[in-house]
Length: 232
Image (cartoon, rainbow, N blue to C red):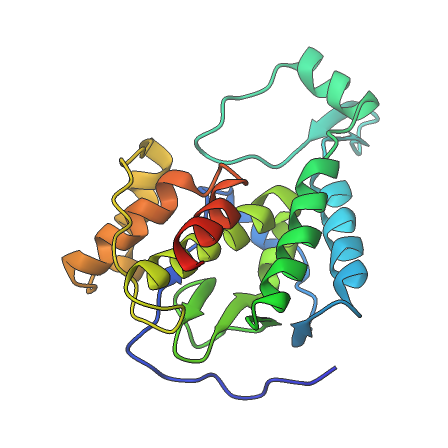
């Protein structure tokens, strides 16, 4: 595996923050210190790390010092509180992310075939958690996002794939992105993210690109569909 030691500075950054309103305790999870060019030889390794994160993030029953029991779990600030009954059900029946794992595997292989490199690395000096560099055909993703688990990682990847389709709309896969023309579908959480410091100084044109990507990142078929439709 080839290590990536230096971040490329360019005006063509397309940022994606991946806060998702997660409780601050979430960030106490240990970040795996990997810098990897993701390809066919190590996709299984990435999937294993995501599965481990899903297991860590799932609701758990703990014994308190006074011998009482409590349930701990991690959730977005925009998600409703789960009842004790719902939490106990999730403990007994952990959520299955098999479809998201399949999406991640297929999307990474699809991007590799297009000649697009996906790097997982530490982005301590960047404000975002992922971005698309069209002139280099590179997607960079902060390795700490692995801690958020499979669903969040899948959305990150899909978001950047939508940016790739926007580049194709701009003329080619190496072009600066242009709006595809999709209807915006932003909820309270996404509007909150778009109001963060990450986007504060970006021009309105780039904010519009982010709004379009945020609108469809949850639809995991969107990125690949748009790339196939616009790039080819």
